[in-house]
Figure 1 (cartoon, rainbow, N blue to C red):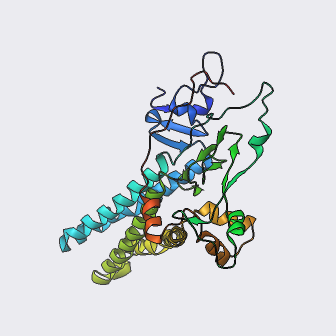
Figure 2: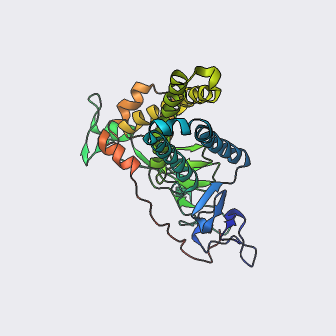
Figure 3: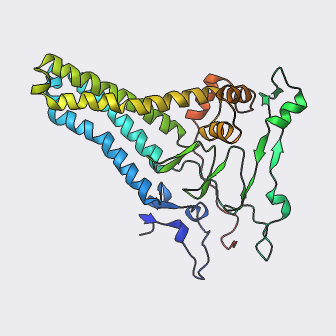
Length: 324
């Protein structure tokens, strides 16, 4: 039964202690796991309802199109119906992949150093700052700054997560909703009920792109049917699909445009918001700083790296009997 669905945050061993004896337990977080951990989603009822609603919003127009309009277009050209189905299936498939695969959860309880009273060494509360402002191994500060100042202003920070008991790798952040550290954490998407991180960022971008294409199809096919075959009075569903596509294209188009801009600069949504909100920097200052960050290699390589990261097998915790 646990293979079908499990709640790793509630898993206990025979003695009532937290069980760290499997990959699922070591990355337990606040998740619902299915199919032996191959499928996962955050255990958040509100966001789970939003994700289901988003899925229905994606499915509904395709169902209406194939019930009311597909036969007319099939007589004109079967390729139109097939291409729409192909685009829509890619949008739905990437939505499901972005929503249900592991976004890059870092295993817990790797660096355990608490004493008998449960306290950590003082140095674990420090932030390790490594020299930044490097690009391809060559120092590249801005023209206004010296090398030493740039290294201090734009460092790479490594912190210890007291919840997950690990030293977080660079660009890894703890998600409060999922209660896990996510590698290259971009943001937590309430519509996916999942974080967008190193493993599913490419699926997220492709979902946005194919959603835009699907909405474009709906706009063209809906209004074309009305123009060629009797108008809106005769085909109200075609009008509905055209309006549906016109409204539905706006949000993914704006979101994809934003992500193209930050990918160009080699930053994540979280890093962008951190600089603009917490440090009160302007958009111009953010992009000036991140031109020299070590993760920004070139616009084309940034895009290739962000969208084609390989999934890796999660490592097991150091011991089956580890206790916090």
